[in-house]
Image 1 (tube, rainbow, N blue to C red):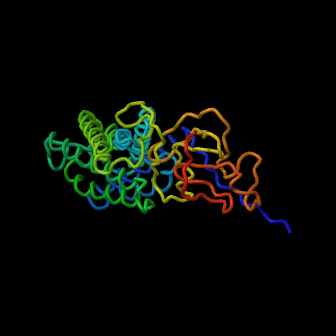
Image 2: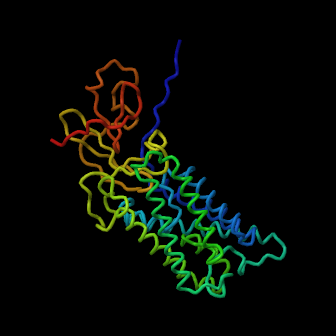
Image 3: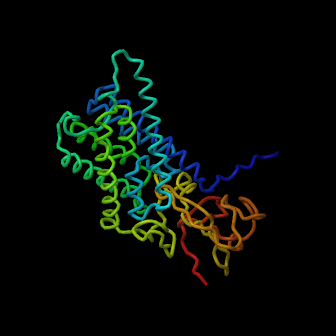
Amino acid sequence: MATSQQQPRSTAAPEQMQKLAAEALGTFILVTLGVGAAIATGGDVTPTGLAFGIAVLIAVYAVGRISGGHFNPAVTVGAAVGGRFPWKQVPAYVITQVVAAVVAALVLFVVFQGIPGFTSTDHMGQNGFGDHASSHIAWWAAFLVELVLTAVFVVVILGVTDERNEHPAIAPLAIGLALSAIHFVAIPLTGTSVNPARSIGPALFAGGDHIVQLWLFILAPLAGGAIGGLLYPVLFGHATEPVPGSGLRFGARAATGAAVPGYGAPDSFQQQWNQDDATTTTPMNTSATDETTHPMTGSSTGSTTGSTTDSAGASTGASTAGSAADPGAQPRIIQDGWEWDYASQQWKPLQDPPTDS
């Protein structure tokens, strides 16, 4: 009787367009739900704070494994400063996040035009200080609030997604709770930004002085994100070498690839994208690396010359699961601290890393 053979799960890294599309979708979800709640409730602290936290939670779980789930230029900058994301990808991520936030604000603007008496001026969930904030907070105090809270947020993100955490699958929950708590504190003060993209979108439709005040809600979160990125290795230390092209070395290549997971447990969910340097080796042979990426860092490494092995768990022409061939004779497939086990057809922690000859 014929039996169906289960197709192996792909471990191919996402393409750049897939990562940008994921960032766009996640940012759109965050701004639509978060700012939408702020508009609908008049900026009520509890529902707005919960909406932002829940929005980032579901967005990270939905597409975080593809792009790393930044959805925030300050997070992208902080991850790059902290050695978790290559600088060369920062511009594309930031532009995508801002465009997605503007599109989300446009959708909200159009929707709420259908409500009698709605005016976008001062009612678009925008941020502000002075006369444009209910607290009338001074600009320097508003700057300090956004700076400190963004730094805290970035440290939380980098900390809970660190590969040394025993339960990384709860990272999105911790991030969502942190964002909600931050909103509970800052909504009465500035309306809470900690995200330049989230501030730019609504301000463009609120118009007037809200656009003039945007400088603070761009510079303060970016500075806070950079501070958070600097604090991360100071507080936690690097588990491995920073991602090539990240940190403060601006393009210096690490001796070995960083193994920094994104959001999710170290299982098939994470392994599909957690590939900074997908190393393939054969006994008594040198290793070769593929062009790969992993979440939260999005870093990539150039392919070296040499034969590569299919990431699905079998080399070209090799036998599939249940093969009677000696596993030791099969090419070794090593990716980011995990090794493909031919006998069980699953990834297992790497026990004996190959040594360079």
